[in-house]
Image (tube, rainbow, N blue to C red; front, side, top):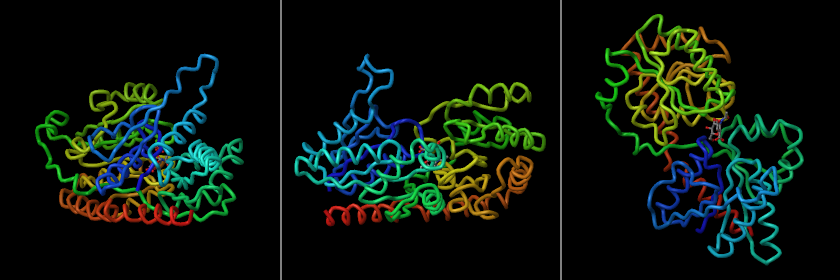
Length: 375
Ligand code: GMT
């Protein structure tokens, strides 16, 4: 199949899912055409089946707000015609579902069919989607999608609660390629961050408010009172300055390492003992799944789709939002018992295997084929 793939290229789970899916489809022989305003951060490998079509939204001095939607719709139309796309897959409803609809209508006027599937990722529904200003456009473009997928049961439920959707929503969970997670723990990396055998805790996110990184710092502070430990923060984002201030206030700056944006966090995960994710909500929590695939247990909150990924008392623990004391208690429980930690590591890995790409890819392929055959 010739597949068009639209996603945000920035550091975020939806871009990762789109990119990893595109790579896996290309490896199976499909031709995958990415369209974005800059190269998705994990799209960095050569394959004869992967194509990248960049468009420019910065060259319009007339506008205060650049017409992203119009430029993207035009790019989709162009790529659909010249690369003979069979199907279009857009990630993140806002604004990609309505852009896909517009492109589809333009192509229809040229007697070209292009079915599109919209994958809902979470904040497009749970945060941004709850702004009533978006409601008519999202509802319309979802109801006109040839298919809708959501990355968890919980997100499907939230979507149906938030919008009046007549279309069917198919749950296709996020995934990892488990084969790529067989890095051995590199003790030399561990020694860099934990020279005195400290426990290594890690968090990966885009440091938005929804990630509750300040809770994370308080959890770490409590853990640190019990164990000598270090916290590694991967990513960057709007909350970073206030997190730095909090670390200074708590006098823990020497134990918190800001690594910045890292495209592939496997190496750092491979030397970590525990992954912390105290988010307000996560539709899925791909970063937690990536940690689990690297045998790192997860302490998280229980909002959204997190309980579908992290299994309480098995692969980690789940607590109510903001229950910093309990999350610290759970972390201390796992970290203070080497046998328990190893058991949780194995459980986490077993759970991650359930989300292996080889189980998920056929679901997308089947969906694409159904959409094409219905046209
Ligand atoms: O979590 C973010 O801030 C980024 C966002 C995105 O769309 O890139 O992530 C959402 O989609 C991911 C991939 O499907 C999910 O794993 C994340 O849980 C979800 N984030 C939230 O729901 C907060």
